Image (cartoon, rainbow, N blue to C red; front, side, top):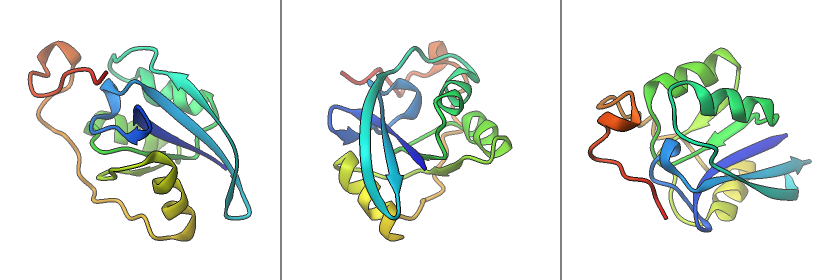
Length: 123
């Protein structure tokens, strides 16, 4: 199983599309067996869900995410957990234990980066 966490540093990013990148955790038997970091290749409509699907992601963990991205992940049978915060590794451990639940929080205020006044890229 591959779990992709939208990251700002070592923490879960508040906004999926504008994160620094994605920490991809490999998990087997309920524990992490490895991880790697993939920089965010850029925020444009529909791209990141297809990018992460291509990396083999089975699960996405993020703080906030747009409805369009959630729809694409759902079409690809990739689980999305929104509303997460704090340390990315701890979020993955909580997910693997069954303790991380999605808030279902989806951002509907924007569709494209240039119209997203409330969200700026995280550094």
